[in-house]
Length: 148
Image (tube, rainbow, N blue to C red; front, side):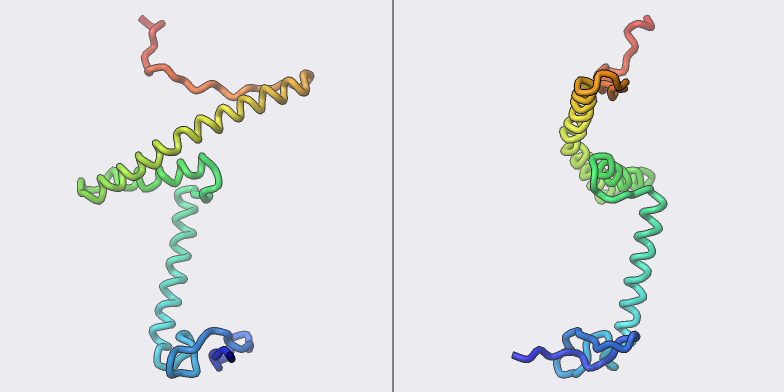
């Protein structure tokens, strides 16, 4: 079976390999009947990508590759909706972020425990090396009992 391809050429002079729209020899982007619509869609897509990059830079978003990064991604929408008017959507966003954070907590604790174990193992394997152990999480209730 022979595959149909758009007969237009790209700006670089290569053949466009996109599938043509039905009843046309051109793909959506190159079809003269949809040129304005395709140009607007391309413009909106470019604006969206630019906005994503600007937003990522403004909130220091580094992706979702670590527990810290995921925690930051959950905090961003939470802090953004706090000053908004009290609505159902605002409440849903806040509850959703809180549920996500709640699910993340065991992984945060596990990552902290792993860091302490790795530091202890490294100290055991190389006793001459000075190791600073990560701090234990503070499990106090926030009250200073000694200040009384």
